[in-house]
Length: 92
Image (cartoon, rainbow, N blue to C red; front, side, top):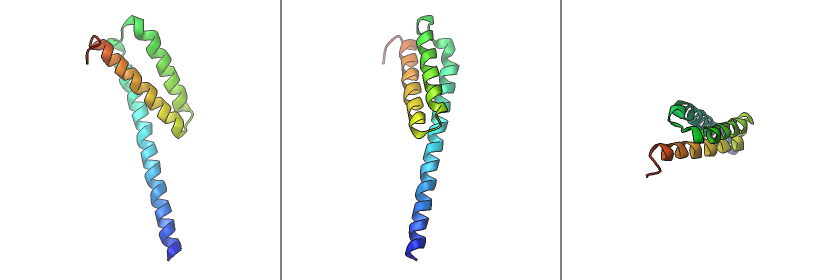
């Protein structure tokens, strides 16, 4: 009985971890899509910076690892914040 309890705990933990990883994958993709949709709001001066950030995020995401996905999320979140600040005129 102890083995079955331990096995069920292990299975539950692994399922929860994979669900969380899948949610992160979706967040990375969502952030990349948000940046793509915001390209009309990006000033020409920022265009190169945003493109470099997107390339870096896509490269991290392509690794297919949890760390790569986390790097993609961090990079895209920062880029989205930069775009929002520039479209607000630097106000918060």
